[in-house]
Image 1 (cartoon, rainbow, N blue to C red):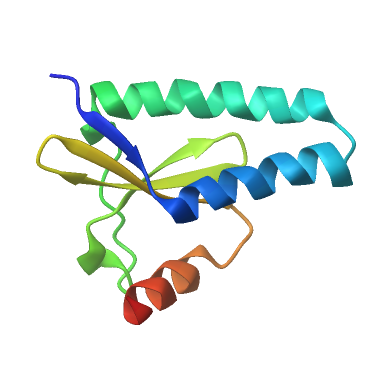
Image 2 (image 1 turned 45 degrees about the horizontal axis):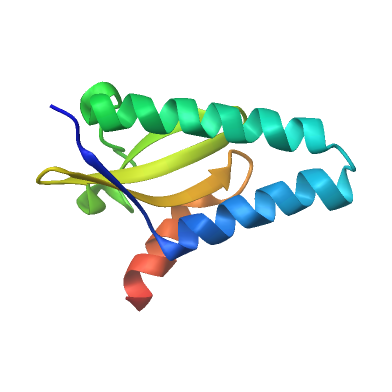
Length: 108
Protein backbone atom coordinates (compact mmCIF):
# COMPACT_ATOMS: atom_id res chain seq x y z
CA UNK A 1 0.00 0.00 0.00
CA UNK A 2 1.33 3.41 -0.94
CA UNK A 3 0.64 6.22 1.52
CA UNK A 4 -0.17 9.80 0.61
CA UNK A 5 2.79 12.03 1.45
CA UNK A 6 2.05 15.50 2.89
CA UNK A 7 4.62 18.12 3.80
CA UNK A 8 3.80 20.70 6.48
CA UNK A 9 4.53 24.37 5.90
CA UNK A 10 7.13 24.16 8.68
CA UNK A 11 8.91 21.31 6.86
CA UNK A 12 8.75 23.28 3.59
CA UNK A 13 10.39 26.21 5.39
CA UNK A 14 13.02 23.86 6.80
CA UNK A 15 13.86 22.64 3.29
CA UNK A 16 14.15 26.22 1.99
CA UNK A 17 16.43 27.16 4.89
CA UNK A 18 18.63 24.10 4.37
CA UNK A 19 18.98 24.77 0.64
CA UNK A 20 19.66 28.45 1.32
CA UNK A 21 22.38 27.47 3.80
CA UNK A 22 24.09 25.19 1.28
CA UNK A 23 23.76 27.67 -1.59
CA UNK A 24 24.41 31.03 0.08
CA UNK A 25 26.43 30.32 3.23
CA UNK A 26 28.51 27.32 2.16
CA UNK A 27 28.44 28.34 -1.53
CA UNK A 28 27.97 24.67 -2.37
CA UNK A 29 24.99 24.05 -4.66
CA UNK A 30 26.23 20.49 -5.18
CA UNK A 31 25.59 19.77 -1.50
CA UNK A 32 22.09 21.24 -1.87
CA UNK A 33 21.41 18.90 -4.79
CA UNK A 34 22.73 15.90 -2.82
CA UNK A 35 20.49 16.82 0.10
CA UNK A 36 17.43 17.13 -2.15
CA UNK A 37 18.17 13.76 -3.76
CA UNK A 38 18.55 12.11 -0.35
CA UNK A 39 15.35 13.81 0.83
CA UNK A 40 13.37 12.50 -2.16
CA UNK A 41 14.81 9.02 -1.62
CA UNK A 42 13.86 8.91 2.06
CA UNK A 43 10.43 10.40 1.34
CA UNK A 44 9.80 7.61 -1.18
CA UNK A 45 10.84 5.03 1.41
CA UNK A 46 8.44 6.30 4.08
CA UNK A 47 5.68 6.70 1.50
CA UNK A 48 6.04 3.01 0.65
CA UNK A 49 6.62 1.80 4.20
CA UNK A 50 6.14 4.43 6.91
CA UNK A 51 6.68 1.85 9.64
CA UNK A 52 10.34 1.50 8.62
CA UNK A 53 11.23 3.79 11.55
CA UNK A 54 10.12 3.24 15.12
CA UNK A 55 8.17 5.83 17.05
CA UNK A 56 10.32 8.29 18.97
CA UNK A 57 10.48 7.31 22.63
CA UNK A 58 11.92 10.50 24.19
CA UNK A 59 9.54 11.19 27.09
CA UNK A 60 8.87 14.85 26.24
CA UNK A 61 7.49 14.06 22.77
CA UNK A 62 6.51 10.39 22.96
CA UNK A 63 2.82 11.25 23.08
CA UNK A 64 3.08 12.95 19.65
CA UNK A 65 3.62 9.53 18.00
CA UNK A 66 6.29 10.90 15.68
CA UNK A 67 8.87 8.90 13.80
CA UNK A 68 12.16 10.06 12.35
CA UNK A 69 14.34 9.01 9.48
CA UNK A 70 17.78 10.38 8.67
CA UNK A 71 18.43 12.48 5.58
CA UNK A 72 22.20 12.88 5.65
CA UNK A 73 22.83 14.91 8.86
CA UNK A 74 19.20 15.95 9.11
CA UNK A 75 16.24 14.22 10.73
CA UNK A 76 12.91 14.08 8.96
CA UNK A 77 10.10 13.84 11.52
CA UNK A 78 6.78 12.44 10.40
CA UNK A 79 3.53 10.99 11.63
CA UNK A 80 1.25 8.35 10.19
CA UNK A 81 -2.45 9.18 10.06
CA UNK A 82 -4.68 6.64 8.33
CA UNK A 83 -3.35 6.48 4.73
CA UNK A 84 -1.27 9.65 5.08
CA UNK A 85 2.34 10.23 6.00
CA UNK A 86 2.72 13.79 7.26
CA UNK A 87 6.23 15.22 7.27
CA UNK A 88 6.26 17.61 10.22
CA UNK A 89 9.82 19.00 10.38
CA UNK A 90 13.31 18.47 8.97
CA UNK A 91 15.95 19.48 11.51
CA UNK A 92 19.72 19.18 11.73
CA UNK A 93 20.83 16.47 14.13
CA UNK A 94 22.75 18.95 16.29
CA UNK A 95 19.74 21.12 16.98
CA UNK A 96 17.70 20.76 20.16
CA UNK A 97 15.01 18.95 18.21
CA UNK A 98 13.18 17.57 21.24
CA UNK A 99 12.51 21.03 22.65
CA UNK A 100 11.66 22.43 19.19
CA UNK A 101 9.03 19.74 18.62
CA UNK A 102 7.73 19.95 22.20
CA UNK A 103 7.46 23.76 22.09
CA UNK A 104 5.68 23.71 18.73
CA UNK A 105 3.16 21.18 19.99
CA UNK A 106 2.51 23.22 23.13
CA UNK A 107 1.80 26.36 21.09
CA UNK A 108 -0.59 24.68 18.64
